[in-house]
Image (cartoon, rainbow, N blue to C red; front, side, top):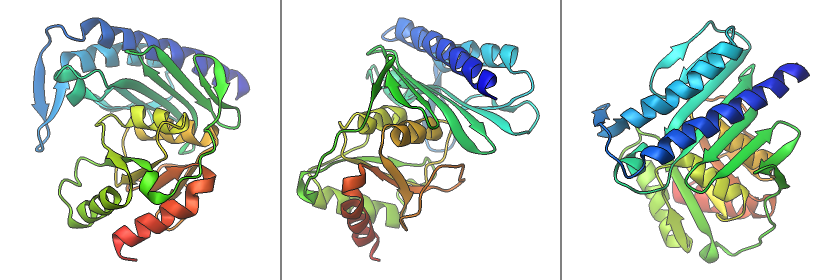
Length: 267
């Protein structure tokens, strides 16, 4: 397994960097944009080009692994190993010329993330997380900085799933976060938010039912940087879940965030 993980790391980094370069080269250029789904989400030809760069490398080096990718869906035979791919996380931003987007590649073993690669090509920031081995930014180890802040000084990242829309409970919780904290940030690019949390640029993340191909690389990055990730009941989170409701923050802020979320949910 050690040899496989080393090769997986090398291939995932190469794939993420190349996909990110494709996006950066086409940013501010001309490309086809179409709507997908019933809620007006977007997909561009750049998503597809970037995805192709990733999939051809994964399929070449790991033909017996299953893959779930944002645009093409499932491929391969189900087994212990699963790759999750979001070739352009933040497509809606990219399509309107907002440089807040990234590439996300995750390898899971028996539904637990063991490798996560996030590449912010616009800023040339490459994040790599390996289970039990810490987190790196452009090859340098880093940890989430310690911050003890009162609730009204917190900057909180908000992530919600596509199907949540204007769900009453979700809107009530977000409104409570708006009232309680200094700022609530919703970027429409979850991998960017997870990397910001891991570096201490966000105090925490509250995620409401947002499972997708961009989630688990971010979770692993946060965990390996020293953050805690747990559900709204306070239970640790580190494996696939089709309907996650999560809080992520520095361990010192755990009780503060749990109290805020429980208040927002009326519990």
